[in-house]
Image 1: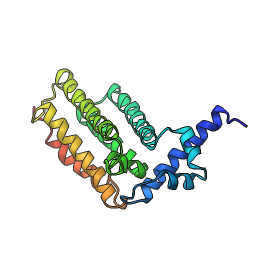
Image 2: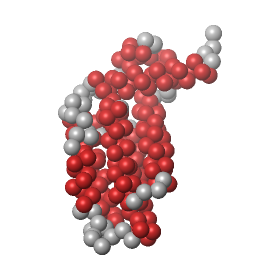
Image 3: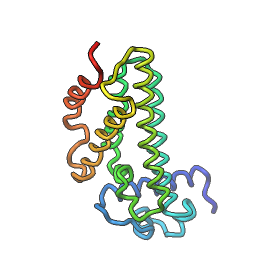
Length: 200
């Protein structure tokens, strides 16, 4: 009997959830389609009915990361608030997402993509570049509309902020997900934010 569209979607989501869980539980171990099929409780052939390749499974997870983050970033940018608050909220969004999705962090850091198709690494690189571009937009808008005066150039400042958050995600993965990426973040942001702009 043929599966309904809802059943196909459910099985597809089940496969992706199993892959994310295996990424969370494994440390640098390459995940095979045979192991994933066992985790889901289906045959490898059944996996390929939903995804033509393992790379496509990873792409689906990257699409989920992109959609979740950028939908919220758009809301943050369009909501009222000063430059510092908006930058903090964008970076905190990334850290909260990472903490709630440890398996996906291995994709976000590129660890799980080692040995996979190069386009997957490229896509994750582009995700971070997009986040950095959004920070630049916030900073430039602040310059124009609020008289914000960053202590260094907008591009350099956005890169520093992105590197700080990205480094915390890497630390989270390296700790085996024992140390929250938000540990000390409030205090660190307080220090950072007081030095981001020149005094009036």
